[in-house]
Image (cartoon, rainbow, N blue to C red; front, top):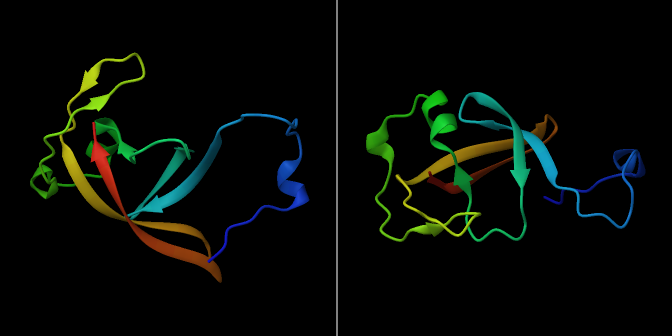
Length: 104
């Protein structure tokens, strides 16, 4: 299903911009706020602090051997990957998808 924005959504936005898109989504049974959408990223990241707050057992993490490059060029070793169900929107305009996250 297509997600689109109306003119009302652009209120206060100055064009030509590179503003980040930040949304709120339901992950599992929790509402997560301030999710940054970065279309230039090569992977979906879930920080360990957020993972801990979801109260998911660490044995659900699948091992990852490939390190990531951090923002400052440092090597970051993920704790693993996990598939999570994400819900965006409200009924009747709602969609649910499975996403794979690297937990760092």
